[in-house]
Each structure stands twice: as structure tokens, then as C-alpha cells.
Image (tube, rainbow, N blue to C red; front, side, top):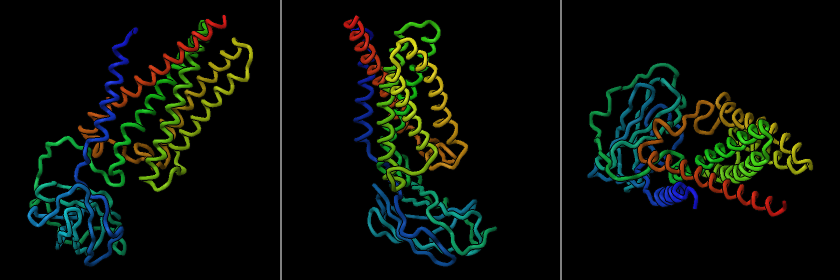
Length: 341
């Protein structure tokens, strides 16, 4: 088998990604609070954790952060290993509309839940409370096990990062091959370049479909709907339809040379629109999608060293699989072409 090493290597990487992404446990984290809003005065809330070890022996603490001010819980009651009741006495004026929640214990360390509460009924400037920092009492825990971060809303679905995002990387890679082969055909008229362009698009569309399906599943669990009117999602759908139109265009022209030239020109246009619709336009509009429209991507808080150890190999593995599939399709097309001739 020619160049067998990268094929076996790519499949071993994918096997590693599939196994590790599914068996790696999630780190302790806060997944839910009983109230979405807080008001001036005493607020009693139930805080629910996941894989946590809340107990009186582990000295559970909780505090809120509003701008630069911390508000310590006046009381914390342990209900179970995954649930506590905390009381916060809130008075004065807010610096920001939202309160971030922090929970700390001797075994799990500090757990962060962003924008846990929305302040209602407060003034909008300053904050007249006791601003003594709470960190003086917190426990620092060194986590030595291999585990994925537990992020609010995502929770267990964070594993989809190893499938959804790399599949779009593979799609971009294959569509890039297609446009390069189309340009090469316009330069020298070699029909092999046109064949490569066509079949890289066909395999790229498969990865686009997989990307849309995994994205829809992720949206259902995190946003509550299979599809939302979002510039990133709409751009991905339009891109998919553009490349479907590319295949329809090819089938509508009988003359081989004319078909290849028209398809190559269309391919250049489609790839340019792909970049605009998925990489550029969503960054300048409001978007729910991570990394777009001011919404942070998997970076500062999410893409930690554990995720990187699986995510980057996943990108390499899915691209290798896509390239292998493209090569197989191209060789099959060449064999069929030789049989006809």
C-alpha cells in the first residue's frame, strides 16, 4: 500500500480520539441554580453540582462576584454531595447586571458558574456592601487526574467538540483541495484536476452534512432547539447548498471541457463565499455560536490542556480520514474512466 503510514497513523489517532473523548470523566462543576434573578435583601438559592463532593467536612464556601466586588454567602447548608443551599445578603447598587457564582470546597477546589444571576431592582452605579475578599478562606486543590472541564450549559456535551468542530476543519481542507484543483485545470486543461476537484467536493459535502448534524444535536442540548436563526448556522447551510449547486451545475452540462471550466470558475466563487459566510460575516454580527459576534470561543476558560490533548489530534484524524476518502473516490473515478476508454 503506497504511503500506508499516514493512513494507519490517521486511523490510530481517530481511535484514540473516539475512546478518550467518550471515557474521560468530567471535572466537578456547577450546572444549575434554582433562581435566575436576585433582588436586594437576603436571597436563598439552591446550587446544583455535577461530580462534586459537597459535605460539611469539606468546608463548602460560596460567593458572588459583581464587577470588582465579591459578596460572600452569609450561610451555606449542605443538602447532598451535589447540592447546597446558600444565602446571599445583597444591598446597594450594581456595577454590572450579572452576578458570577463561585463555589469552593476542600476536595473540588473552586467551581465557576458565569452570569449565574441577574440583578433586578438594584441601582446601576457603585455597590454599597462589605467588599472584603472571600478568597482568603478558599482551598486550592491540585487536580492530578485526566478530566474534561465542566462548563455551564455544555456539561457532558463538551465531548462533541471532538466531532463537530474537526469535521468542519476537514470540510474546509477538502474544499480547499477542490478550488486548488479547479484553478490548476484552468491553467493547463488536464482533466485529472477536474476529477480531483469534483470528488473532493463530494467528500467535503459528506463532512458538511456531519458537521450540520452534530451542530444541530449540540444546539438542541445547549440552546434548546435543533436550529436557530444564527448567522453562523445560516452561513453553514447556505455554503452546503452552494456546493450542492456545484454538483447540479456539473450534471447540467454535457460538454466535458465546458463543464470543467464552468465548474472551476464556480468553485472559486463558492470557496470565497465559504470563507465570507463562515469565517468573516458571523464575527461582525450578533451570534450565539462560540467565537463569533463577541461570544468567546473555546479558549481562555474552556480549551484547557486536557481538551487540547484530544481536540488537536481529532482535527488531524478527521482530516486524514477525509483525505483518504477523497483519494479512494478519485482512484475509483480513474478506474471507471479507463474502463470506458
